[in-house]
Image 1 (cartoon, rainbow, N blue to C red):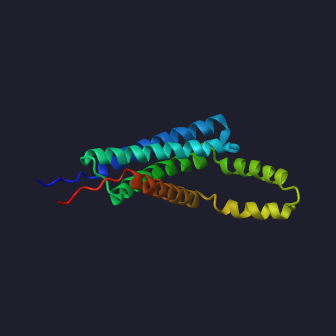
Image 2 (cartoon, rainbow, N blue to C red; image 1 turned 90 degrees about the horizontal axis):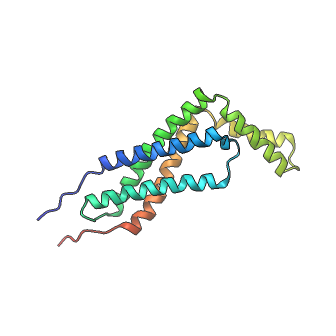
Image 3 (cartoon, rainbow, N blue to C red; image 1 turned 120 degrees about the vertical axis):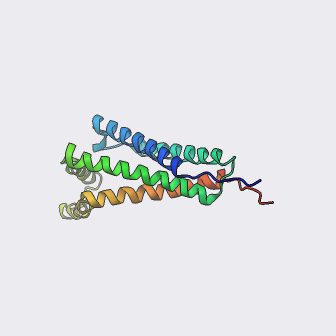
Length: 175
């Protein structure tokens, strides 16, 4: 009897959309509360936990659909696929937020970060501070920001999928 491997496309799409929507809601709450201007480190941890949960559940669903078997290649494929779909959806949201809803979003964040840098590093000259933020400003263009968001999502998806795949893998006996 030969086992048929289930396609990962449906699981990737479902969990990618779920992660994307949850990430957008999380981002919208951060924006609505004003926390985006100077976020606490716990916001990053919470965002990571949301991604971790979605990727692990997606890989678990794929493993269940394949009679309890999961190899590392499939874990990476599922996890990175989910991260890509989510990254695209989140990127579209961030573009909409920073260009339509709040066009001066980047300026607000950079101004607060500049004040924070001046407070934390009083020995820096105004010229040095301006140099630091000149580089940051170039990375804030919508297209570069979108690309960096997707690359970041793929990178985190790869790391999480690699570790979770190593833990969750169960290879099928071939004999």
